[in-house]
Amino acid sequence: MKSLFLITILSACSTLAFGWGAEGHRVTALMADDMLTPKTRIQVNQLLDGGTLVDAVLFPDIYREALKREVPGSDKWHYDNIPVCGQLAEKYCEDGNCASAQIPKQFAILADNTKTKEDRARALKFLIHLVGDIHQPLHASDDYDLGGGRKTIYLPNGTVPRNLHIAWDVDLVKLLIRGMSESDFAKQLTKDHRKDFSRWMRGSPVSWIMDSHGISKRLAYGKLPGFTCGEADTNGKQMGLYEGKPWGDTAVMLTDDYVKGAAGVLPVLIARAGARIGGLLNSALDPEGAMPRQSSTKTDTPPVAPATPKTESLREALSRPASVENPPNK
Figure 1 (tube, rainbow, N blue to C red):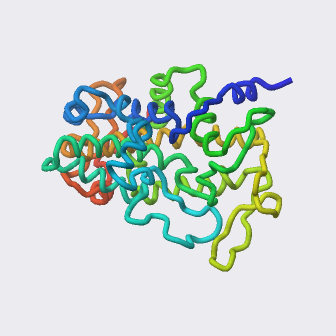
Figure 2 (cartoon, one colour; figure 1 turned 90 degrees about the horizontal axis):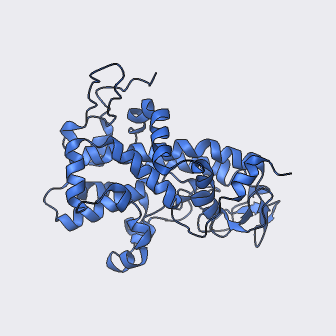
Figure 3 (cartoon, rainbow, N blue to C red; figure 1 turned 90 degrees about the vertical axis):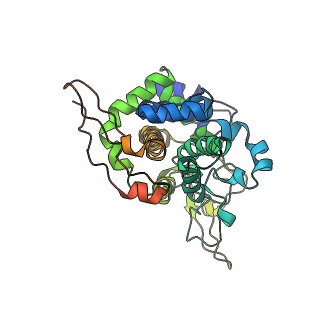
């Protein structure tokens, strides 16, 4: 008899393959929206012609092909294909077409009041989406398999084949949210992790991506049944093997432990993405007002965006820690 846990997993299926799935991206946008200062909110509203972050966050996925024609290479901005096995053996971010290169560029465009409204609005849509994408481990790693897109898996005791990338983008996130509204899930993540928000704003998009890459090495790829890294070929390229042999058309059944491990780390990754989106928007659009405000009463929940000076440099913005650390919720 299947456990309730497995029944929940098996019901979480979708044929859509968005980064984090539509649900995950909307949760990050809901979290970020809750962090916006009044000035940032006004500017977001103006740039989006009355729309919200939730309305805009899926734009780069929904219009990926059209954007690719308008902005060549933009279809590759959603990820950094860092090899999961061995050392980086080839250039994977040609012409700046990867997430780690584009997040600072889109931040700078958004923060620049001399840019056109159209350019800044598009930068806003890319920024909130790409920051979400890089927290999905398979958007920060690759086994020469489209970030797991060519590895066939089954969820525990399942009969419907999936690819590994979709499982992380969609199925495992649906498991987390199941039984809750996206809004309630976002509020729960904020409540659970608010004390971490200022700390999470430190570092850089590259360091954030490398955190995701590490999770991919340890879990997303590393805990796949039978997965090991092979020896480097004459070109220095290393690929994953299944029980010591080329992966080929192998289809594996994920274990309960694998799924439980993913379910344990995904809430933190989604929460980091939401917090960083909100913090970056405040840094770009209202840097002087981004300092957390003091509560008027002991029961008030203080805003969380870190204080940053007016700047168009993402590196500079992130190099300055918040001047007020947020106390943990009681």
